[in-house]
Structures are given as structure tokens and as C-alpha cells.
Image (cartoon, rainbow, N blue to C red; front, side, top):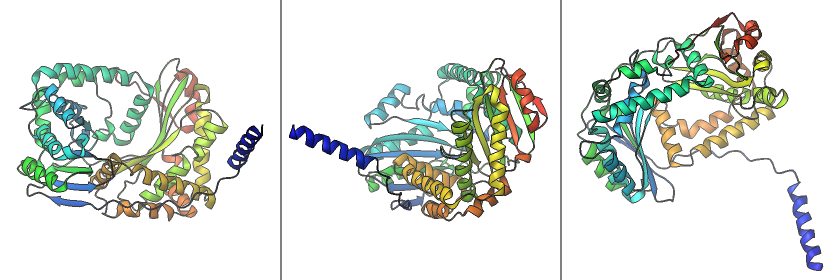
Length: 462
């Protein structure tokens, strides 16, 4: 019985301790990138080596300056087809042999096509890093582009496109991007089946050949590896990769306008809304203060818009505001799936929160909480190999200064309440916002009239 009494006493004591108010979190530590080696080969290839971590693994990314922004009108998705073809084998290995070669290194080759670049990636054992360099070089420089796989890959893309076009969120995003960027590639986010059907192997091959070269590529290696062996492998596998020259890209001219675009989804129980406007890209000194403003306004779970329309009103489960940056352009937008009958009410609350922040600086304590959240998230995001590569890619893509990562937390914590209101007044103006709603027209159209003249849009069916 004494043992039982003692056990109960310890248990209740633990409960009492657990119920005490936890101490306030301390300031987030600044992020310091590990010692980094950067150099350039004679052919222009850039290399970044980052020894990191204790686990004997390494991540490599060969990033090429080719993305969806380089596609012509009527060719949306052609870069994606080229990326898929890269995995179908090289001049010396078929697709299965390529996969087996990567597996023997303890990894798997992946190709990721994005708006502004394409990366050939692998995670593998650290002692396989040099051989992984050679394998990525083989994929990039000696792709087989087999004609036999084109029909299958195109059919897969057509099915994927059909699924996306049957879903409200991709349709809303496409309409918003088109409204902001017009015919610029940033405004073309979804392919059409009729476009994909016209793709040819020579087109995909020519696109890769035109943009993929040593002077338009950057190799990142992060993890535990033999630096001397990796450098030797880079020299052997990539030093003679031909130069292709820099190709100009169309300049984006985002347009801010008060407009309402409605895409009818008869019977939809939710409305997908995107509400936003152009802002400044990461090269602007206002970008970090604007990022803090976004986090406080709608970009985090405890943010004002989220607390309002999710927690208080129950209009939506997962609202979120975003900064979507591109080289030379960016947008801010609030994104949410809201109950159909509350579409207008939810949007009214979004505007109220924006207007309040435009009028009154937030309390210092509220801002400090958001700054701790952003600082901690930033450091956590960069605490793994892939996170470090992504941050380095971000810096190189936007041409940011070398100390951007090191000073980011400091800049976040330097933002004042007055800065937040200044950013909101300067950039987040509801009178200039584009609103896209995908939902049941008969229920939501009348709810949207306070936000501008409603224009009904019919997206491509395929």
C-alpha cells in the first residue's frame, strides 16, 4: 500500500507540474550555414559543397536553368514531359538499369520541374557521393529520350491534367494566375489535353538541349562526403559539358485590379476562393517585413484571418495566405475553401482583418509571437540536407546577397508593429485585389457583388 501511495503521489505531483504555466520561449538562434565551398568550372558550371550533419548520407541536386517559364504558348507542360523523359534512361542504360544504378548507391534519382528551373536529385550514402555525381551527369548529358515512352508519358500527363481540371483548387489557382499575369508563362499553370497531344519527341528533346549546359547549371552537394573525391568526380563528369548560353525570359508585368471572377461548380458544397494582388519579390528590402506581415495576417495557424474565419466563425477548415515569389514578380493571396452559404461572409471578414491592420499596428506581444514562430520555423526548415539545398537554390534563383540566410532571423526580429501596418497599407489593398471563386453560381453570385462586378468564366474542359 505504501508503494501504491508513493506511486500515486508521484503521479499527482507530475500532473501538478504538467499543469504549471510553461516558461516563455527564448529567442530563436540565428541560422548559420555550415562552412561552404563554392567555385565555378571553366565551362561556367557552379558548384556548392556543404559538409553537414553526422548521418553518413548526402543529397545532390543538379539544377538547370530550364523551367515552365521557358515554354512557348500552346506548350504548357512541355518542360514536364522533358523532365519525365530524363528518367527513361540514358545512352548506356535503360530506365530499369538507371533505377538499379541509383539503388546501388543507396538512393533514387528524381527530376523536379519548377517554374524557373529543373533539378535532377538524388539522396544516397555518403561514400557513394562521387559515383552519384557521375550518375547525375549521365542523366543530364546523355539522356536517351526514347520514342517508345512518349505516348505513355503523354497519356499519363493527360490523365493528371483531367484530374486537376476536375478539382476546384487548381482551377481557382489557374484563374488567379491568369488574371494577374495574363499570357505570361506565370499565368499558365495547367496544361490542356489538346496541347499535350501535340507534343512531339523532337520538341521535348530540343527544349532540354537548348537550355541544359554547363554554363546554365549549378550542382549542390550537402551532407557527409569525401570532398576531394567529389571534386574529382565533378571535374571528370561535368567539366566538358558544353556551354549553351543564357536565353532571355519574358518579363512579367503583373496587374492589380479590383475584379471578381466566378467559375461555376453546380452543387458544390464549398467555394474555393483566392483573393490577392501583386506585391514585391524577394529582391526588395520590403520582402522580409512583408513576410512577417503575411504570417501575422493570414500565413500561420494563429494568424488573424485564420483565427477569425476558422476558429471564431467556422467558415473554413484550412485558410492560408501566401507570398508566391518569382524572379521579378510576386503575389500575396488568401486561399481558402469555405462553406458555400458563407462565401460572402468569409470574404467580408478577410477584408475586415486587412483593413484593421492597415489602420492599427499590432500589439508588440502579438508581433513577437509571430517573429518567434518565423525564426524557429526558418531554423528548423534548414536543419536538414534538402532544406539547405532549397534555401541555397532560393538565394541563387533570386540573386540574393551571400549573407541573406545568416541575417534572415535578425531581419525578421527587427520588424516593428509600425512596419507591419506600413507594409499592409503599401501592398495589401482590398480595393486593388482580384477575387477568384470556384463554387455554386446560383448560391454565391449574389454574395460576391460587394467585392466588384462578377465575371463568369468557363475554364477549358480538357
